[in-house]
Length: 230
Image 1 (cartoon, rainbow, N blue to C red):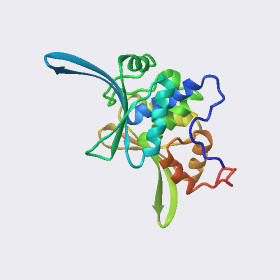
Image 2: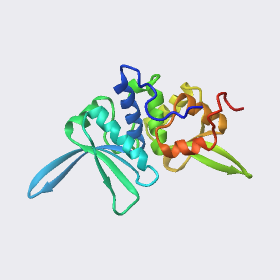
Image 3: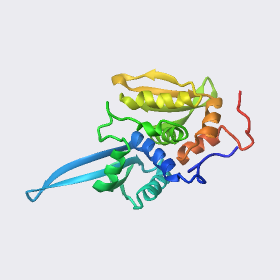
Image 4: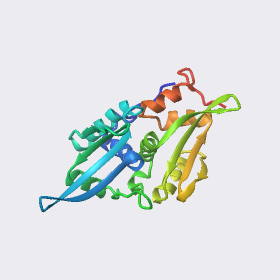
């Protein structure tokens, strides 16, 4: 079995669309789009910002991957800043032009609560798979769960109340998954794909870009696994 990492449609002439679809998923997970004003020396300054915040330890490799997506999509390197007070790293870009580009794609400004949505053009195959990969790699995880002494995998994602809640579940269902939906407080849900068969299917059809998730998946799946487990 080959563990999918990075872009899985590299030979496609519309590569930027695939990169952008994954970037959209990442933004919906751990990103934000904002317009902020501040007053400096009696002058009002406006800042236009695209920001993705990751764990500076667990997601160290992945933050470099996200930075490469910025470069590929915007032809410009983002700024990368490690926060001193927390294990967090911000990968961000300033400027009205890149921000407006994403808004033109159908993205919305922060806050995500009650507002975030997947732009319709990314809801169709194969772009939908890249969106859900980007979201899971940021606001989800592959977890190793101990159930009565038996270790088994779970793919988990938390989704805040917003239009994207139904959309992300729809993406899973239209790709043949049957997710468990657990209601949490304040309208949030936890989406769960439990078991080895779901992990195998995810790896084969959607893949991972975050090394943190790949390492856990590799602990369950071997390169000799070429048929779906029962």
